[in-house]
Length: 107
Length: 120
Image (cartoon, rainbow over all chains, first blue to last red; front, side, top):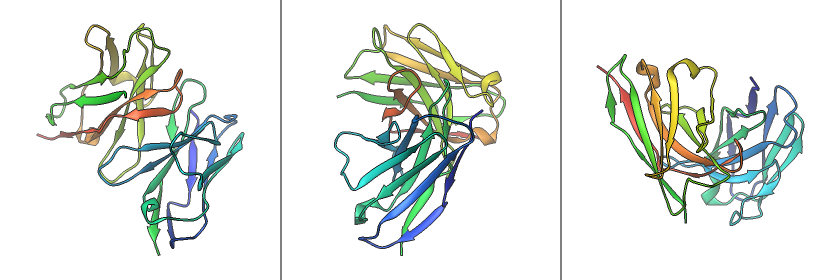
């Protein structure tokens, strides 16, 4: 099974900050990685797929990059609505694995 | 716009079978190129993929749950279903149904989620 290690588990930041989250896959997954945002009591919301493609309707302050085993997710300028938990998901070889999640908190 | 809605019992006794159904509206399960899946989230914890099914019955399951899981599609009702056998308290979670874009790719949209509690 492909494991995905996401870091950090918690991130404290302020409105306007630039933040980055990292996911590492245990083997090469090409660009088969997605990023989600989840708020309490709600289902996850797709933000980015294929490592760097922004889902329609998602603001361009969200971005993703990487390939192979190393991936990053960046919010260029935090907005109040962005404080939530973020997950990465790999979807290589007919299986799915999620990262452990990163809770983005207000500093 | 496509919407997914889970139906679940709410409470299941240990050792019994948990059964959930997802009803798809706004699009047809039939003749699509999409797979349909289930993902769960224990209270306060992260996301776990359970498995994925296609309209022809092709399935892929999480290896850690494979021995207890089965999934199916009912195209006449535009629904797909999950059965999880021999449940324990560790199966308590919010269960989400999802559409996988393409084969078993990213998930969008998601259902609202259904909390299932396993307790005697």
